Image 1 (cartoon, helix red, strand yellow):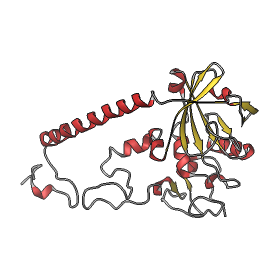
Image 2 (cartoon, rainbow, N blue to C red):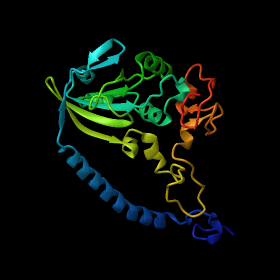
Image 3 (cartoon, one colour):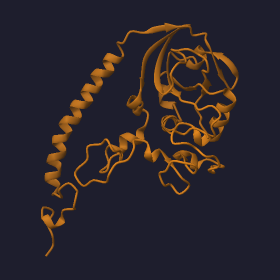
Image 4 (cartoon, rainbow, N blue to C red):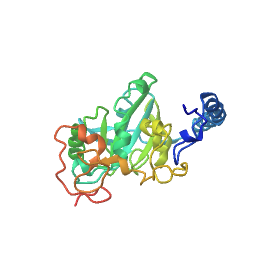
Amino acid sequence: MTATPDDPTTALPGRPPVVDLATWQAARDELLVREKAHTREGDAIAAARRRLPMVEFDGTVEVVGPDGPVPFLDLFQGRDELVVYKHMWYDGAPHQGQCEGCTTTAWHLKEADYLNARGVSFAVLTTGRWDEVASYVEFMGYTQPWYSVRDVAGPAGGSMGYLTCYLRDGDRVFLTYSTTGRGNERVNGSLGLLDMTPYGRGEAWEDNPEGWPEGRDACWSWRSDADGKATWGPTSRPVPQWSRPGATPVETLGRNGHHH
C-alpha cells in the first residue's frame, strides 16, 4: 500500500508535519500576510531613516589609502552618497586572526556596481596600520577601496564594526545613518538565504521546532579548518580565506581571534 501525504507513517520524527501541496499552500499564504506586513514596516522604517537629522563634519580630515593620505571627501569618488563598513582590526595579527564577523560583511560586498549606478560609493575603513591593511586586502582579493582611519575621530573614524552612511553637498560632508550588530546583516545575503532554509542559521538563539538540530554560537560556522569543519583554534581562519592562495594555518589564535 502506498503511503499518502497525510498518512502519519510519512511523518519525520522531530520535524513539521508532512502534508499535501494544497495544505502547504494555505499555510504558506497565511505566513505571506505576515511577511508583507513586515516588508511594509521595513519601508516605513526606511522612510524614517531618510528623515534623520544630519551631523556635519570636516570632510578634509585625512585617511590613508594606497596613494597615501587623502581627504575623506575623496571616498565619495565624485558621487553624492557614500556607504562605508568600519572593519575591526587586530594589530599585528596574521590574516586568519582578523575578525570573522567583519570578514563576512566585507566579503559579501566585493563589488559595488549597483550602488555606483545609483550614485552611491562604497569603501571599507579600519584602524589598522596601512601596511598591514594593504597586505590583508591583497591576500583576500578585495576589490573595494580600503582606507586606514587610525587615530581619526568620528564620524569619519571612531568605533569599528559599523555600517555608516554619509551625504556630500559640494565640499560639505554629513553623517546621516549608522548601525552595528545585527544591523550589519543587511549586507550579508547568506544570512538572509539561511533564514529561508529549513534549518535556518543553526544558531542557538533561533526559535526552532522541537527536535530540530541544536544550534551553536552565532559565529560558529564563520571559521573553519582546512577540511571545512567549523572550529576555533590554531587551525582555523575565516571561511573564505581557504579559497585564497597560500591559505595554510600557520599561527596559533585565541578564541576571539587574537594572535598569541
